[in-house]
Length: 349
Ligand SMILES: [Zn+2]
Image 1 (cartoon, rainbow, N blue to C red):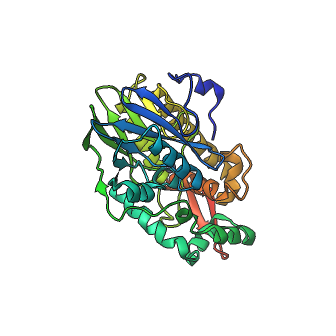
Image 2 (image 1 turned 90 degrees about the vertical axis):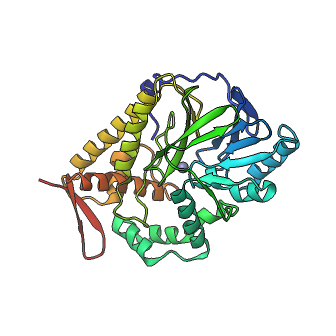
Image 3 (image 1 turned 120 degrees about the vertical axis):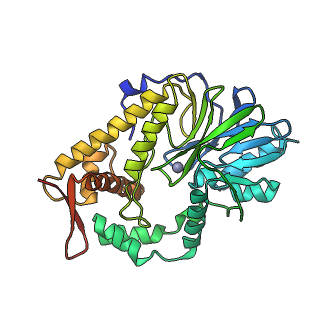
């Protein structure tokens, strides 16, 4: 959901210009911003190149499509000629971040640093790539209120994760919360966030107050927080809110945040409190809306300003469920499944 213009004014963007697609821009000494295109409504991802004495470490890799591969090939022949890729550090498993790790590893031998849950989740999703949607997953979306047409669209899209990846290295180096990683002239503390993906790694350079946030903290859009069929009764929104509170205590208004989407910014605690407040306001509105029994798909009108179509249906459903599960876990609403397998949520009197 886009933030209001008023909310956005509180943040500061220290860089007047952004790099063109496929170009590097130095944002701190030896720390380069690389913007890569994405073929979605979210049309770019930011990658970060960290110089070392010899070669560099890369944070996130880009989506596994021909355009991104062309850009990498051009870079290796121009700006990065003669520079070795020493390691890839990937914040989380989503294909725009991890998509080219397999391809880059094959090309360079660079090891993949990632948290264990992200790595294993990715591997299990890749296994689904050539399979049919399981009945449990169909039941999950039927329970959310999908009609037969929406269910068949879901079936046709199933396994799409693997199509945005070029494999993944067969081994990894584990990142854990609190680890200190030395890269070039800086030490980076690994900070784990949850809710958007299971064990998302951020990197914090305390001495220079620079925070590489991945999708855990973005300046203008709120990250997707979804319930997925693999954990139908999870409460990712609670995990997300806990992570926001933790980051709001860790970072200050001067911290330079390097996000995966949008521009580098300062004002992290302000932004984190906006995000918390927006979710809490959505929860309050949803609780009121459920004074009569509602399905997850009925809640779109409360949670989203943009129309929901087949392209954003799965994400919107996941977000609706995340808010409903959070209310359920807080004992503010109850859920009842009807004879046709559809879940109805109603405020507790
Ligand atoms: Zn993501």
